[in-house]
Amino acid sequence: MLVYWSKAQKKGKISEPTSPSPMRRLQLIDEFFLYCCRSAAGLKEKVLADIFQVSVSTVCRIVITRANYLYLVFASLPIWMSRQQVQSTMPLKFWQYSPDVRVIIDCTEVRCQSPSSLTLQSEVFSSYKNTTTFKGLIGIAPFGAVTFVSNLYTGSISDRELTERCGILNLLEPGDGCMADKGFTIEKMLADHGAKLIIPPFKTTAIRRVKEYLIWDNTIPITLSGTINQLWTNCCLMTNFQGPLDLKGHIPVA
Image (cartoon, rainbow, N blue to C red; front, side, top):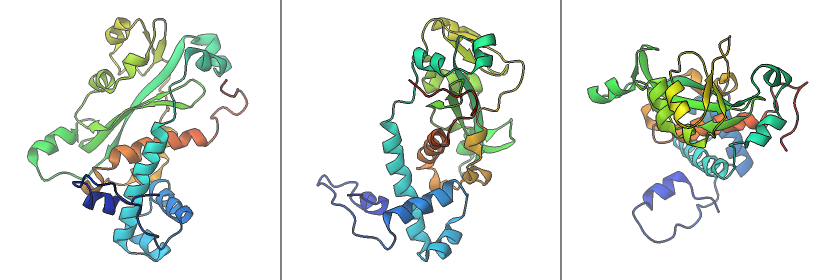
C-alpha cells in the first residue's frame, strides 16, 4: 500500500485519494536495505544505483520514500520515558552520584551544502564549525536510550536558544535533573520548569552512536533539505534498536 514520493509529489495538489504505487523492480526488503546503505553506510546514490542495478533517480525516490515512511512509523513510538522508567533502568554510577537525572542532552551539527542565497548562507553558517551546518538536540536516558530528538535548525542557532525552542523543557517535571555540558547556560530556563541543571565532570559523548551513521560524514546536499529532518530522526531512533550501551548494568525498561 506504499505510495512513493514521486507519485505523491505529482498528486500533491489533487484532493482525490492517491492509489498505491505500482510494483517496483526491487523488493520491499531490498528497498529498505538500500535505504540503510545510504544512511548507515553513507554510500552515494551513484554507487547504490550500480549495486542495485537501478537508476540514480530511482535510488533518490526510494531513499526519500523510505525516510518519510520510517519517520511516520517512529513518530508513533512513545520514546519519552517516565521518571519511574528512567530510575528503573538507571546504571549504578548514576544512582550513586546523580540519581535525579531524567535526561542527558547534547547538541550536534551536520554539514550541509551552502545555499546560493546570501541570507540563507548567514542563517546556516556555524561560527563554531566555520562552515554551513544544520544543528539538532538529542535527549538520552542515563542507560543510553534516545528519548528525545529535536528538529534540525540552522547552524547559527545557539545551544541555549535551541533548547528553549525544541520543546524538551515542556516534558520535564519538578525535581527532574537535566545533565548537560557546561556550555549550556540553561539554569534559569530549567528552574522555571522546576528542574535543575547537572554538569558532569567530564564531556559527554551522548551522540556518538548517531554520528556513526556515515551519511553524516559527508556534506548533505541541498536536494535532501526537504527530507533532512526525517533522515536525522530516523538515524537517532534506530540507535535504540542496537541494544544497550552498558551491557553489564542494563535492566530492561519496565
